[in-house]
Image (cartoon, rainbow, N blue to C red; front, side):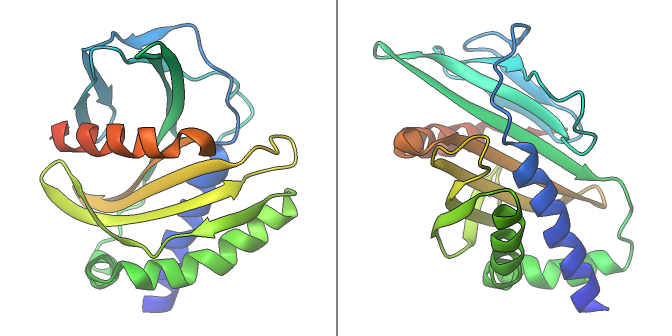
Length: 204
């Protein structure tokens, strides 16, 4: 039972990661620079005064794409962009949520299951893992939740190195995955920015 539940968690993670591969910046401003970004089902993030969020484009044929936002703006005369993806597992895990709690307390367990599945899934799309970081807990809105980070080539259609960090957590009896995807060349900048944004999260 525990293995099946953990396997389901990892499959949803893979859907989230693969959903983030279409970087077509939208034109509709969802949250103004310095404003508040509302992420359905989770809560709101405060944005830096240089950063705005736009509704992502190119998702019409991706039924499992979740909710996606393009984060864009100029900081010290340099243009930066990343994609924020939120995915909610609609099924109520019920008693099985307690089993996820065990894995949540030990993020390495999620990582050990996620890596081989992700490697295969990426390979099927012409991608690969460039670097894998040991999963650990990271602050998110006053909580410490499992976070998986990696450097990837996600697909042969987008053969550029990308950096991905995915937070996995239970909220209101539902499983969520929240991921940030950015160009690998900008990963250190975005890691710092998102750590700061994560502390501003106000749960719904």
